[in-house]
Length: 186
Image 1 (cartoon, one colour):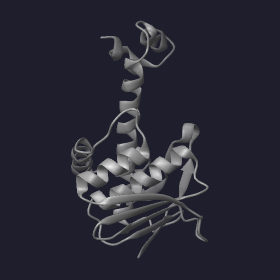
Image 2 (cartoon, rainbow, N blue to C red):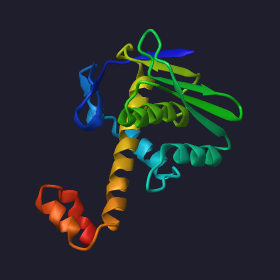
Image 3 (cartoon, helix red, strand yellow):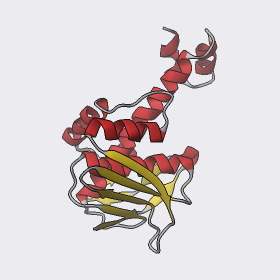
């Protein structure tokens, strides 16, 4: 069993940011600059069964069906080291555990991080916590995957919400600083 302990800050609006300095590269959301890996993640994310409005359990059920497994999501008590996530893979089941004390925005990120370990083919099972060796490439990759998947889901959710607004409402939102909503009226 592999133990992950990472330095985590909960930013404004529920954003989760790891602040590691890895061989001169700062990892802060999309600060990790391995472009080939980012393209690999984006390609993987494009194949995922993401539906809107987004619901985590429905996504995990659809992902399990897509991958020929049953995915079980559950809450777990936080462990001594600040354990926040758990991934246990069996032949026909994948168990994802998320700390019971995690706030909703962090629950998504923890689940996406564990899904990252699974889909990226990292060997073994994972118990993920608050501190880790900063040179563990698999943890960095799982964090990057989670950040990219969370950004993809947020963008899709915003597009989905905009489609259901009355005409002109997106232009009003854009006038007050939410520029991404301009494209919805086009």
